[in-house]
Image (cartoon, rainbow, N blue to C red; front, side, top):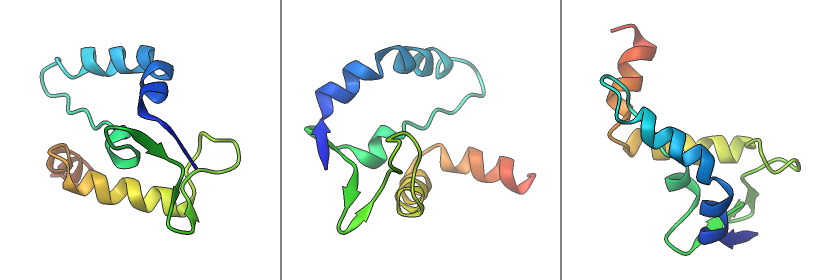
Length: 88
């Protein structure tokens, strides 16, 4: 349950260009979800015995959401998001 990272990059090229542009704006933090599901060579749809995506291939399962949250908490963007959610 994996695809080559190069295939995912090609598929998401338009989306990534928008993210890159947004990341240049003052006060905008960008969190790239690819970091949660891909390494340099592969993107994974399964972790251990748990599927990360629903059968539609676009929406996360509860296991996928947990992987995403863990990755987000390790990212530099976390402090901005944490402050926003807590109302600080």
